[in-house]
Image (tube, rainbow, N blue to C red; front, side):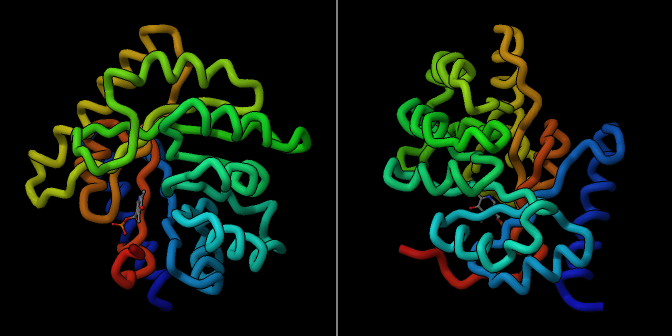
Length: 233
Ligand SMILES: *Cc1c(COP(=O)(O)O)cnc(C)c1O
């Protein structure tokens, strides 16, 4: 069996085991395959093994891949999960189905204004700086509620929930803490009347901890496609 297909199968088993362990319904966690740095044929291989949702971090790389796989566009779901600058919002609004990394109103306003009327609303998550690291992107937890209210009012976006990339940890107990904090924040927003259903959290190394704390989308790269070259500067 080709490597990507075998890896995907192994990740699906991890997801199913984690759902069961957490007492959550089978199939309640969606798998986003993070294909950044991997070529279109790797996405094609995952597609042939049944995967439909893919995540990209870099705008140009993402749109090049979307174009290379244009024949599959109607069957694929493309998620933008990387840092987003104002000058790239139009491309993202025109090409992607989801954005997980919205962390300021100006970016959300541009995405809404630039979303083509012919497309369904762009599905968005707010990225939260849940570990409180100065260097990380994401909105501070204390600022999430007003930002979520403002974004929920934009016409061409559907605010779905929250996303976080906690500080890595090898300790399963420590891994759960930031995920629990993100879930608590989502619960707060719901109590405030926002109709949200998505917690985008958990990656190759910590998806079990994220699922235990209520993740609805896990974003998995390495465990599906293999190791990446070191991150770009
Ligand atoms: C790269 C990346 C992932 C995937 O990470 P892995 O550890 O390779 O599974 C998930 N989310 C975001 C935002 C990423 O940039």
